[in-house]
Length: 340
Ligand SMILES: [Zn+2]
Ligand SMILES: [Zn+2]
Image 1 (cartoon, rainbow, N blue to C red):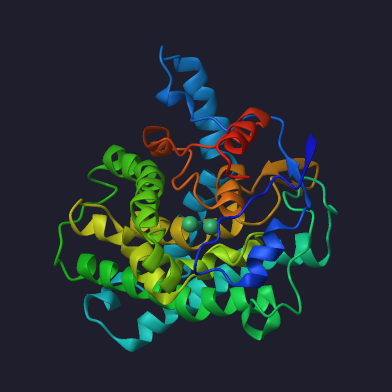
Image 2 (cartoon, rainbow, N blue to C red):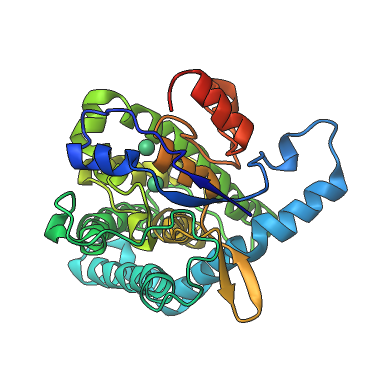
């Protein structure tokens, strides 16, 4: 484990307030994982099946992939109104869906926030940015980073997520779009569950790059980037216009046949998993285990702004030359370009 002092730079994006620029350029200390950020072995040549199998089980599925699949199955069976009610749009079941999503976000983001940032159960171990979340800062609504992040996540995030999800489940329940059943096509639907993660990652990149075009950045994406130092509630703390774009992830299932569990997983991965990836800690202690949590790759995007627009599992940043692996050499290269 190494610690880097003051390596963060910030460009003077017009949407950032002066305070933010000053704050981010101030020298501070943060944790730099020893391992270099690399694409998964499915993109490496020659193909090594044993390495791919190990990555798939130990990194892709465990722990978060399995957690979100399990949660989607459980939530569909026990926390969701019956599908027969969803063939017609009614405020009652849409409101229940909203409550379910808000409750789960409260559990996942709120739980991580309580443990890591309030109880500070593991201190600053594996914490990327050594500062705690901002209080008394004019940059945030209510002068408080957590309250600001909660407001945008719940009021706008959960509402727009639920609207897209409700529309998509209605399309299935009413027979407006083609669907398939687990009893008819278990292998196909199993593959769709896995595809959800890759689609979400690819969709994130497609939706995210245009948000860095200055006028759009200034209008909406700057709100998410106020969080240079992220916490669990920063995950889907976005401007409503960004939410409208971000949750178009559901639209794939209007073209490709799936089923409501796949749709539920899409919502959970898009709505809940950012609480984990933005939690601020690379690893989180769970009993005796240290589980992978915060994403170093996306944390670097929050710190450096114009690198790592996508996701590790769909490494399109490699194609665009914006891949930043977080090593000393990468920082030196950035420095030589005069950007630090
Ligand atoms: Zn961004
Ligand atoms: Zn982010």
